[in-house]
Length: 182
Length: 429
Image (cartoon, rainbow over all chains, first blue to last red; front, side, top):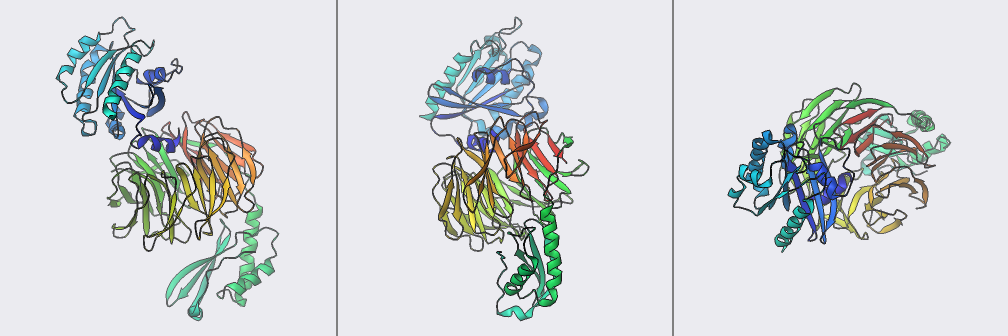
């Protein structure tokens, strides 16, 4: 990647390039999702201490996906990456019920951010492969997603581990990118 | 033997030589002299000096060209030149080993830079700070806190080393006291990320280059903007002053590089020829040539007086991510996304050697000050040291757990600092 490539991905992208920002609490499965999208090995994933960037081709678009570490101490730095975001993807560990409040709080704060205003948001209710996972509908209700009025949003249940639901989410992303870039 | 003294005009009789100083890299003699009561310096560059150069003939040549070197000084000059020759003979064969791992930042590092003496170095980071480190102990000396986004571009005002400039994605540049960490000025005016910066050699100006397509010169005394250099049509990602400080070159994603007059802020010329983004643009030591590297997989050499293309270096299979001259300007090195690096002769424009071994793209390359070694940093998480003539890989500096974003030699060529995406930096002795 190198610093120069990061600069190139920083500038407002040409028509066929899209900047996706992947956020969520630590252990939500963002990096696994990123690697699943890039068809890479997902067996050895460690907590992200910074960020990972991958470019994926989808439906004629080049999706530049930025996966940002979610640990509490580095969440204040999420703001470093807001500029020029086309779509925000927020990942939730659907089985970690005791952190629903925390993740809802972080999401609410993101939706207040000026630099992310009007940016469409896709919420991945991840880890549906686990028996204890809450269904997407329950999460949507718990997070009061229906109160989001300033942007288009979607919640999609998925398993980054098995890949189930991931493509459905990305189809929604591409559809909204087309709408946005027009 | 090309010496390059600055011409002495009619006022030469008023000039009085005070002292002579050695400069090892590139080889030269610094003259401290008094003119109209003011202490000034100039240099005699000895870029072609070789251990076998005839010292007597050289000193005669210098005396003819430089009135300040009178007959009474010739023995002293001979001594200095012999010292330089000795130094040139001791080609650096230093073997590096890991000295310290510094858990420097809580987020990835961007760039690293050393002061001239090598006593301390600085690291910039995504955690919005720049830190100052003691090179000998690895101790953290200062945290320069205040930017509101990634600290990307950093520099010491070498050779002085008493000030630090930091350029940030928060669109500002800050000037700091390297000793106390006090912030002298915050330079505001850019409308996008600052991604490159440099002090002029006199340490009176800071130049910043931005994603907003402009470059700005700032007065470090009063903190005011001196000029905005406008003309590029895309992001500026590289800039550097020439050795004299009267010119600055900016490299842009608009496929061109522009040379500007630092006195007037006016464009001198544009170098046009690359067919993709520029990655690096710089002058050689004697300010006679300009080198540009590009995403078009080539590197080009230009006549610095008029911006005409002298040579195109081809051969790489992918983008050139970095390129550089050695200290004397005789050699050129290119680093590419194809995972290889190459060394070219500036005189013959021929490829001298190819550096093969990295298992990922090479994003940084530099010569040691002696010019016999190259240092490369790669996405394969290693930095490597190479013989600049044979292309042989002499060492792989292994240990980083993520890609290396920056690496640099100190002025003596016996210390290396590497900065990585793994949030650490490493000191190698």
